[in-house]
Image: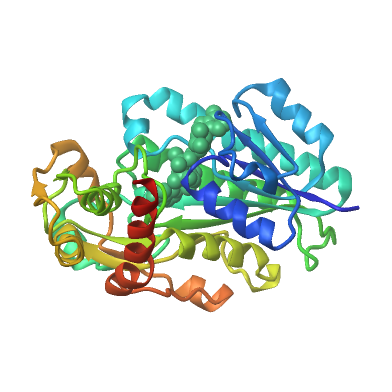
Length: 342
Ligand SMILES: NC(=O)c1ccc[n+]([C@@H]2O[C@H](COP(=O)([O-])OP(=O)(O)OC[C@H]3O[C@@H](n4cnc5c(N)ncnc54)[C@H](O)[C@@H]3O)[C@@H](O)[C@H]2O)c1
């Protein structure tokens, strides 16, 4: 049988890059999003469903019509939106994920295959108690400080555990006495802030970095909602997507965990701004006016993460430093992107 790949939340920032890359590999893609799929992506997919993940019938129908061996579950409300509408966020982020895991298990059982569920978690699962502890723990590993302070972080951490739960309850590896080699295979990356040259983020607390860069490229003034010294890790969107696809292709026996940190490059808002100034010298100056709530959230996230497990188990290697992310990816693409819009 030939299986399909389902992408939920396909019309978002991640979905845009992921669809093109999966399509280039010949993957048969089905998408689901609240909104219509970007018309430029439509020719790359077999079928694009405009659906609410929380609407039972429509989603059930997708799983009745297609057999999946891989699901990229991207649909979510991001951090700022989740703080604004916490109960709704919890429903979409957690119960939406449970619905995907449950349906994936049923398909795995029906077809006697492993169904991979690829999941994007976040550094928002961390909750460092104060700036002193943050400074004293510059490389936080997966199991440290997982005490999130936001609804988004709580939701994502719950999903990490639920994905592991479903895997261990519904997939037994070959060395298990029951000798079952099918079921759910949940794999998850905890991403740092993601910066794309092509899409403007909506509703993330790490959005100050991409917003600052895009505003400068458009010649607009930007008021940054964190202080210059605020430091967290970032990654470019193509690297983030490559990492997710690499983890998806990693041999199961190499994986020692279900949830992996990846670090990208760590930078302060001030360091990012210095490169913005250098790259767009004519752009209006950025001002730094920390927003108490959003700054408070960034303060609980680590300066950087320990991603040794990802490097060891599936060969993760960051491609960019902050400077090379600017010179090799962001600047050429952002300049071309806005030049085309004129
Ligand atoms: N962008 C980042 O910096 C970042 C960092 C870490 C993790 N993530 C995670 O990666 C995933 C993708 O992020 P993104 O940046 O593409 O987000 P995004 O907000 O750009 O896209 C999310 C998509 O999900 C869709 N969606 C939301 N609720 C839905 C529902 N009920 N039914 C169907 N579709 C729904 C939205 O319409 C949107 O197209 C998310 O799970 C996010 O939490 C993102």
